[in-house]
Amino acid sequence: MTAVKITVNGQAFEHNVPDNTLLVSFIRETLGLTGTHVGCDTSQCGACVVHIDGRSVKACTMLAAQADGSEITTIEGIANGDELHPMQKAFHENHGLQCGYCTPGMVMSAIELVGENKKLTEKQIREGLEGNICRCTGYHNIVKSVQAAAHEMDI
Amino acid sequence: MYATTYIKAKDLADAVSQLKSADEGKLLAGGQTLIPTLKQRLTSSDRLIDLTDTGLSGISDEGSSIRIGAMTRHVEVETSELVKSTIPALAALAGGIGDRQVRNCGTIGGSVANNDPSACYPSALLALGATVHTDKRDIAAGDYFTGMFETALDDDEVITAVSFPKPEAASYVKFPNPASRYAMVGVFVAKTSSGVAVAVTGAGQDGVFRHGGLEAALNSSFSAESVDGVAVDDSVLMSDMHASADYRAHLITQMTKRAVATC
Image (tube, rainbow over all chains, first blue to last red; front, top):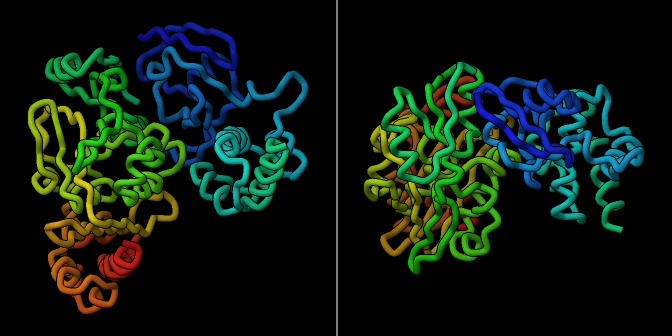
């Protein structure tokens, strides 16, 4: 067992977990934050993307023990009370989802992408979301959503 | 994942001693290959030794070469002003590995230690004549890669850094597998004072290799056209569900031409 002390969405947590616990299991099962999804078992789909100390990572490809001492933001932590994050709002307004399963990962990846460059081209958005797989939309409205959010966040 | 014990090594000496005393110890760098492999129970380890706190990260200018610490993440190489200004092909290679989240965690030391036959970095080491530094010795890239997933490293040896001599010019072009982003074929072409080197990844049955025929043609005339007359033997190439050996041979020619054109 390893003691994991982390801050998630501004709240401090400390739990003892088996050493082989994946961060995504820790977030979902130990902390009960089920907005972070698991869409595959091969580290390819990106539904589990969270921010650790400001960078986007796949929470299924890191042990909870590795994240000890870090600050994590999950999809539950980006809205400001009832006010959606501009990226969430853009996905809503542009219908950037169908079933919604991949959406938490898409939104978390897109926030990092737009945080680095608010003048993204369509090609940059598509390349920037390579680590996130959507099986419904064909990506068209996801790209539109990210473009809209980038515009909104640039003002 | 099978049960394991996780240890965060305090420094390099601690990592080495943890590795020596474990039955099946494994070093955990960025984890972008190791964790998925453990998750699927394709491998197991009684002790995972995390190298994050061992101080092996960072990029420095050593005059005629640049030195990249083993725990330096791909995103750091991709965005490093030093790498971009001295070996832009290496920064571009790092920026094309996996996806954004992989690049945010994956490290050069992890990639080089794993020596996946489709990984990008091994081709850069071989073509640029890099040196792999370990806690015990320095190993020339030409002596380091010994086969598919095989290296010259001892079981208890830890990579500390990789040094890349600055080339006159270099370019890396890969044909990525559309699903995994690993190289179906990747070709790294480097021009140095000792001539042209061409290293191929993603194709060889024994992992990364230099192609003497392509190098000879490019040493006599450095142009995409001179590649056309070079025969690429497909009997030593991989054939799998993604591509036949014959197709990979074709890709080697085409990726080499593209690399030469952008060198």
